[in-house]
Every structure is written in structure tokens, then in C-alpha cells.
Image (cartoon, rainbow, N blue to C red; front, side, top):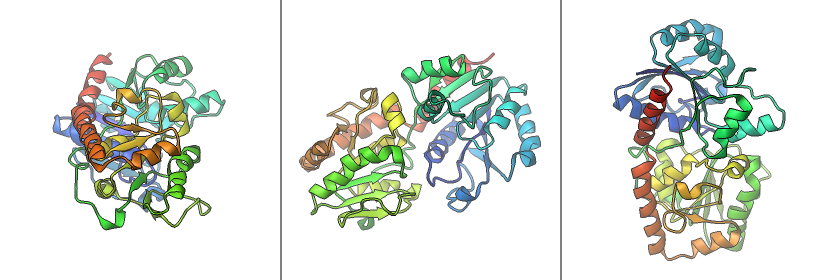
Length: 355
């Protein structure tokens, strides 16, 4: 198949989770014989942090503004089997109009931010990447979130056919590697700052750091404010490039996952960071959310923390126990959560949606 995708970004991993997922998924689709064309608006904040100019298994089209690329996009769609628009695409509404007005056999919307979308709708706020008709005109709606979110997309936005397509990991990129001194820590956390994650981050990361001043804690990620509650034993890396994610994970015996509030409340929305760390064989301690047990088995493949006490207890576990949990998580990730697995799931969803 030929897939034409209009998305947020695949060229820059700075401050977003879309790029890493797409890189692995596009490569996996390419290996299965598909042709992918990804249209991305060349915005300044991604251009200044660009870490990929070409994509394995597909073609990247960077454009300055919609009017400059509309003709090319129409020509690509004319020979395509699938036209797809994703959440947070800067020209999402215009791209959707082009896709829906074309003769492409399968028209898809992929909401990679479903809890945020539904939260905005519930609050009566506009969703900048979805038009007035919602999602009712698409043949297929993919959702990064499963569970009740699938029904909500139907009821609130008129989606006719909704299928979950979770995040994934590229095992060629994320695998066990030697630790690096610059990332050395007893507990690491990788994530862009988000206000709706701060309360839980304070409980599961900042408070354990305060209680254990002799332990070393590491944060990697952008957009942390100047008044963030740093302490002497918390070390910070402003940006960890995707190729260094494995070293970041593997330089600590335990990695923390904290879910954004809308996603934790809705559940069934596993972060890509979970799969990345697991593929590296590093155990994860995560805040709880509905459906986590369908991704990794608590106690055997992942640790669950509801309070600072739980994180401190996890840090006190014997190294052999942590190693065992990490190995079990890696086995599960490689069996069920790779980009190759998601590529097969996407194929099945697209085949089922053909008009």
C-alpha cells in the first residue's frame, strides 16, 4: 500500500512523543513493502531541534505553509491507498478536507492524543485539528488510547469505526547498551515538562529524592520552568536525543514513568517511554492507571507506585530482583509491543476499513 500521512512531526523528537513512534512504525511498514509519504509543516521550534532529515522506509516532505504544498499533497493522494491525518497536525483541518475530498480508498484519522482531545471537548473548548463535522466522514479512526475512549470518540465525534493503535518500540534502536557516566543515576525519569504531570512527579520523584539525599536522581527532558523544585541530588539533561535514550535508561537500575493526568484518568494509554525502557531491559516503576495490566503484568514485568513510599521501596529492592523484572519486561515488549507488531495491526485495521 501507499500511505500519505499529514502529521505533527517525524523530523524532530524535541518536546513531543509523535516523532519516535512514527520513525519506528514507518520503517516497519517499509520493511513490509509499503510506501509512506509523511507531510510535516516546517515550524521553527522543530526546525531548530531537528534530529532527522530523512526517514527509513518512507519519504519526508517538509513544507513552509499549506498553500505551498497543497498541489503536491493532492498528487500524492491521487495514487495512494490510504490518506491519514493525525492529531496536532498544524494543518489538520485543511489536510482532512483534502483527504476526504479525494478518491483515496481509505481515509483515516489517527488521534495520538485522544485523552487531550476528549478533555477539550468535555470542557467545551475547540479542538484545533478536528473540523466541525468531527470524525464522522473518515472510514477509520485510530486511537492511541483504548478502553472507554473508543466509545467516546464515537459518541462525541461521530467516528464510525474506531480501532486502538497503541505506541510501540523499535528494538533496533532501543536495546540493552552499556551505561554512560553522564546519565548515571539510582532513579531516572525521561519526559517533557507538563503541568498536569507535576503533582504526580512531585510525589513519585521529588519526594523520594528529598528523602534519599545520598541517592542520585536524573531528569531528562525539555521545558522545565526555572522555579522547578530542584535539589542537590537531582541532575538534569535538557534534551536527550533519541539515539541516546537507551544509554539514558541503561544507566540506572530503575526508571520512573509518570502519566499525564488526562491519560491516567482515562487509562488504556501506555506511554512510549514504557516500551522503550522495557526493550532496553530496564525495570519501570509507574503510576497506576486503568488497563496497565493489559500492557505489562504488575509485580512481574512492571512496578506500580501510588506514593513516594512505593518508589522508595522499589529503590530498596535487591538488584537481582530489579534485573529479573527488567528481563521479563523486555521479553513482553519484544513479543507484543514492537513497531513491527503495530505495523501488522495497522494493516489489519486498514483492510477492515476498505470501502
